[in-house]
Image (cartoon, rainbow, N blue to C red):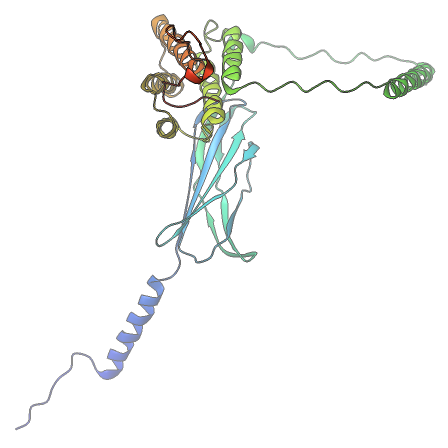
Length: 336
């Protein structure tokens, strides 16, 4: 007797299952895109710069650029950095940094932003980012908020044209005199004065630190604003002196890039102390005592002295010729 073989599915059902698996395998290979947005600060004062970083990861092939748009915008766009593009093993990464500021106080939502992927001038996909809450506070204290409104305008009766015609005539005569004086000066114009050379990074650092001290923000209780400006001044110096984009980097990123360029352990330790203390004041409401302020000032002066030694190292007492060829840099690196 022959035994019949029983299949769990009939041939038609088996064909449908195979077709479903083939289609499912194709769908899993479809291009995927992820977008995210982060902000450097969620609590800021009016006019403070906030760095927004938009990151796009996509498996779309040959995407050339991205375009970022938003319908709701309570902030002012101060600057935007060129889009960075990196090819990874299985996907492409785009990074774009926007610098914004709020000029009104209140609670706001940054975003959502619409990110468009552009390929050959065509939009291949659009994605929306998340939104970020931010609180904007005023730098004024309570005692500064009692400014009263101006009084209303005084109603002056009469014919304004009676006096206006004399004003117009006087302005016309004055304009003619100024025009003649400028024309005579242009004919006798001397050779232009030589341009003033720009300050070096170290000179600019000392000048801006002196200006910050003259504002006396610590004495007036504006600790956070003082450390925000101190951080901006030092990051500007690092950008000019070492060449990396310190202004748009976090504290951890800044110290990481600095270790790649600087080998002087004292400078690295002092920079780390100043940045970490500034972050505690800005984000953790830390109130330093006078010894901490003195230590920050001392470490800043110590770094400046170290950089100056690279420009003009001390002469050797045992060198009677005292020639420049015998002067060497012993601090591990050069300052601009």
